Image (tube, rainbow, N blue to C red; front, side, top):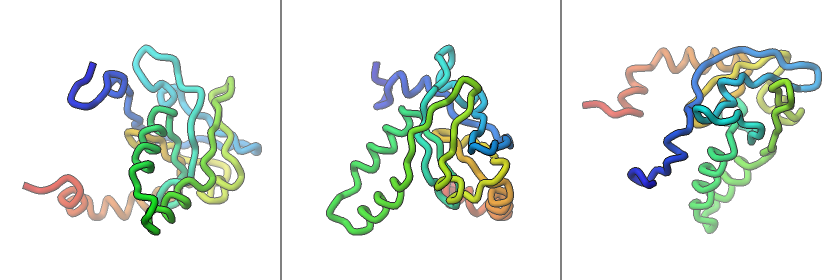
Length: 161
């Protein structure tokens, strides 16, 4: 059933919300809470994600369905443009498919741990179509900066009347 260009399965996807801090063990494993693994009401939790460097120094965690949406956008970038090629190369660097183990954890590869400045803990921040993994201090700095300009950002991003 098509509802204005959005598939029925897309409409039933649960958005990612919430912000929680979790420990990272000595093997680079971090728990992904069930609430963030359950991608649709009444469906089984996701057991596979795509993990990659995000923007502003975080890591981004996508479900397979959301990752496919990202890939579709990347496929629309003209391959003849130098900026598009450079962005695509950099964006896809270190993309890793990760599996959720029996304890609800994923393993963060060392290169991605270093890229995000992660140590013994990370903040999982639900951002509608993805989960961002942040070093707590780095996230606090970005949040404080944004909160200091919420009205201006809201007008610019959401539009003003």
